[in-house]
Length: 414
Image (tube, rainbow, N blue to C red; front, side):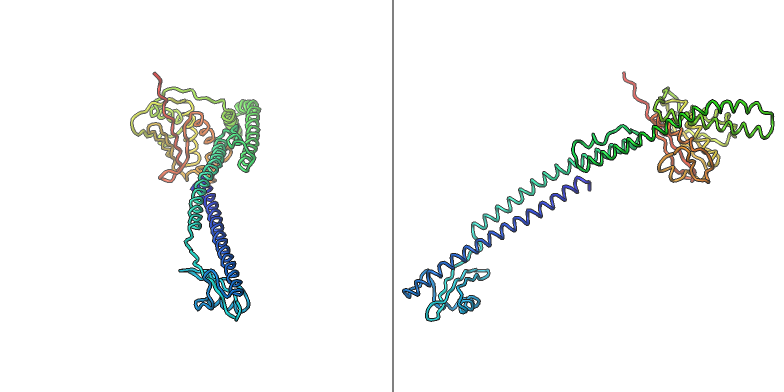
């Protein structure tokens, strides 16, 4: 049950209970007033009848002396010197009035007390109809009010999801609308958080870009100087570490470009299956890989997609190298329509990466090896530029599974 339904139900139940209590109170008060009027009328009649009997020995209004049907409670009250009234219970309710007269006798009057009084029946019908109508109006009003509140909360939640997706300029306060209630306070707090996050991300992006840019020149010089060292094991170690440092700087520059949002895809029509096969072949040559270390499977007919082949090759290279480094060969690359799957035979991706996606400078569990954690981050950045969906999970064999789903080729307008 949604918030709108819950609020509407709460308003309806509370208002219905309040209206029920009010109707019962009004009807009870009306019954009490009617009883009081009947008692007063009977009391006035017995007083007049007693005065007439004391003066003229003539009882009025059909009063009777020492009526044998006189209720015992009323008889006891009169014997104690009181003038009293008494209503008997249903059915055949009656209103009695009695008083002591001369000679120690009791003069009494009795009249019918009609429970089904027409005025009370009319009042009961009016209360029932009025209560039902009021409940209906309250239900309608509660649905409208709850709907308005629910729409505002849903709008704020939608804005929060947009912010989480990276649209940090989205305003929750505008989505919440005007007002000074708790929803508006929540929206303002969310905007404040987004503004702070935007500042932190901008500072992080600038720091990454500045560091990578400032390191590029000295690293290039270091690599050039390392090539001039005399042959030997120490020289090989220096050159190897210099190359690693250069790759790290290049990766940082690439991430900085993703963060700035300036990257755009250079689209071209590509036969996906054939392209993936040739890209894997080039990677084998560049990395000096054994032919059986990376295996390509093509399922179904060849499909031509409109995409950026350079970015596809970069994504494939990062996924395959990550599998070779942290998993176990062979790495199986499967192309099925617009879907590319890369599976290794290692221990699989960590649960945190599967749930939240790759994070820079976090390489996962220790058993998956060491690294800077930038390869999968860069692959995810290229996939975002392509408008593709890159997800990480576990293969049926227990290894790591990366699935790249390319967007459909847009239809050409004639």
